Image 1 (tube, rainbow, N blue to C red):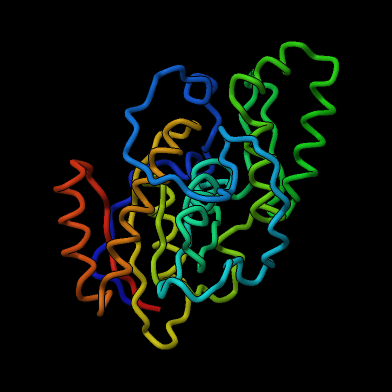
Image 2 (image 1 turned 180 degrees about the vertical axis):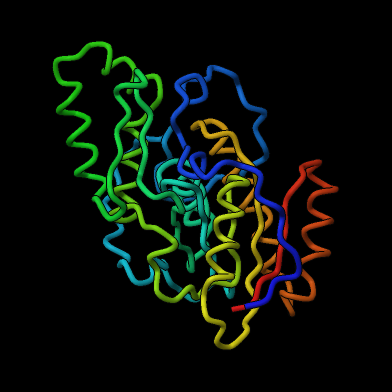
Length: 269
């Protein structure tokens, strides 16, 4: 597999799995600057919206695409634990009518925030969101401090939202065949991990994959904003005729318009 360039990795390997583990980030009370958003019918609930919706079923471990016919590009939305940022974006894409969407993680474990450093909890990828939810509810049943922590961080709400979208967190490195046109990452370390994985795979058809990083603080509020930014960018990418040729110009124009720096790479697999 070839790649036009690769951003040098200067972060310690220990940090690759860090996601969603800073209490201050998760419990931020800052009011984000909201971007314009269309009202959507029957949305998939986000971590903020808790209206009841049935689960969308198990998309499968081999290829977690929610498929359909009203968009031409296939998207994978990636963070470290497939818990907050990638799943908020997954909900935003489905709400916006995108039908070929997957969400994945790149960490070694699904790591959750904790009220204390000693209370850090990790789960294997593939553990159903409902099982994780039950475990946390059980732990906090008689612990007022944990109840308050989960309420402030919206962690239980996030897990309920995730379970309505798909069954369990999935790891990009465990997917045998990556059939995506666009991979949107929400962390620079994840962006590096995705490129490293793509470079380690045996090239087959040398199909282009646009890898884009929208670096996002890992808290529920910023995840909502990043999901909207990702949808807006995807809507522009959908208009392309030749994605590999047009994507660089589209991304550059998008950055200029939004005043937001993105990392961009075209890889071939």
